Length: 88
Image 1: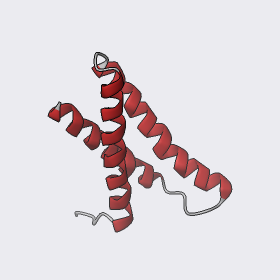
Image 2: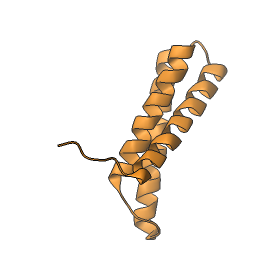
Image 3: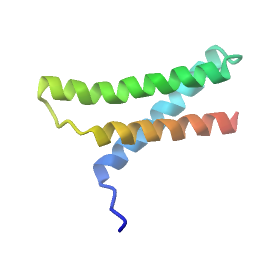
């Protein structure tokens, strides 16, 4: 059975796409000869930012902690990175 993806997860996905687009474009602009290493660095940064927000919300007890929000942001980040790499 197919589960509906909640609206909250789509917001995190869209933010992830924007984050992937921005970070990948910035890194390719700064060091264009490091495509593979740069993409790995951007992917790591996206993971740290996405999961970092969830851990912060768990520690300070504000908002709600949901690991699937981080997963949605990371998935969006990968899509954003792929768009930049395919366009370039």
